[in-house]
Length: 73
Image (cartoon, rainbow, N blue to C red):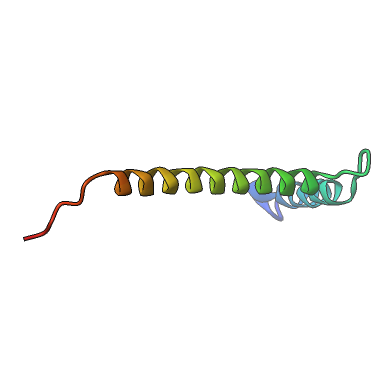
């Protein structure tokens, strides 16, 4: 209690966090771990946003081509 004072539990929580991270990396359930699921979810979100952007760009280009051009003076 005197050595670290209020910070006496910090090393315990640091070690607990390291152990938890190790479990997330190494534990495989049905040959899938936490980071495989996370990477798959990130890839799905990336592809979804890419498709949304492509759809938006198509609608913008369609609107631009269908509207009459206004000459600049």
